[in-house]
Image 1 (cartoon, one colour):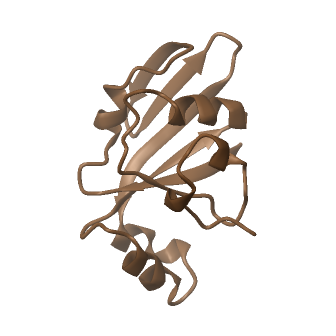
Image 2: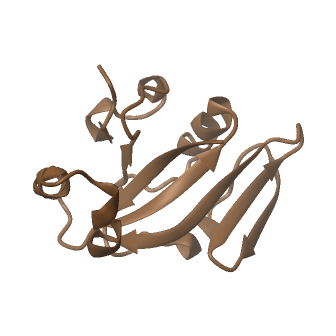
Length: 128
C-alpha cells in the first residue's frame, strides 16, 4: 500500500468524505477511524481519521513541520492519510465533483503524478 496525506482546515474529517460521491465506486463503508471506498475491479482506497498538527509532529524531522505550517493557509490544519494500491484510484477520487477544493496533498517525498488531475500549487512534499 502507498499513501498520501490530505491536509485541510479544521473542517477536514472522515464525515466530510463520507458525504462524497465517488464516481466508479461500488461501496463506501465507515468503520471506526477509517473510511473505505471500494471499486468494482476489486481496488479500494482507505481514508484514516484526521490528525491535528500536534499529533503529526512525530512524523516530521525537526523544523520540518514548522516550515509546512508556515506554508499552509490554515490556522488549525488537519491531516487525513489516504492509503491506496493504485494511483489511478486516487486520481478518480481527486477528480470527484465534490472533492474539497481547499485541500492540499502531501506526497511524502514521492511524485505519484497527481499534477495531471490536481492543482500542482496544492501538491507539496514531492521529490523533484
